[in-house]
Picture (tube, rainbow, N blue to C red):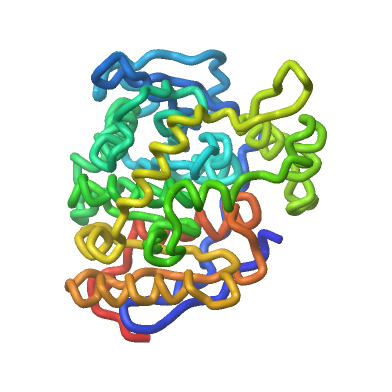
Length: 363
């Protein structure tokens, strides 16, 4: 399925994201990321997976290590210059492991880290701090603690600042907030099936109504075997050990043998509350970075692609560069699983934009 490059999108503010002419990097199948924690205010710890980069070989360090504070105790691999830094942010109620297919490929060309948002995965789940400013601050602290932003602060000879943040779904929204907060310290923003839609306006739902609409059916939660079988069935051809690990990280088993979401209820509600405050029409036109967008299967009304076109036109109206965009109408939400090479191509595109990337595009 990864041979699918998607349909390039054009129009006001859009530029077709075509197939990457460079050979796609091979996945580092034996690589095992190292876990780190970065400490935030209030003794909140944010977890991330350090997948290493082209200078590090296979990391393979067991356990979770501590980064005392942002910018402190930087992993040794980050002292090697000359390669970009890439931060990957997962979707709602998911974990850093969902980015494994992309991280295994990106590490051949960049130093790459995947984080667990607060309230998710191995990060702490405080009762507060789920507003957009704090979520962006968490992501920036991870990038600084991992040493990724050292690259952005040391521009290359061509003036580029090679730091890219990529997000999926809700993570795309957090990535957009992060890119906005970083200004010209961020070279690229990649939105994977999210980050351009105003959900309250599109759905007409409250956060609680939307959560009820996306809840997993009881039969899928009846056991771990049922849960894994359901996730496998999305696309058996791409089901592997990484996908199983990602699926297992989403849930916990109860004493009765059922499974339930691993995310705490208060963290889920607060995260969706933050999502409901996101206004792409004002956030994305203010982002200095180059932007790429990969859209999965749309609804029958085509609302997602229409929202992307509106947002891209708003960026063009603000004098920003075009959104490099492609659509995958036959694929579901998890494009990192189905077309990792396409996601890698998007990261490459915004991490090394063409000289005329700032020019307006009208298709």
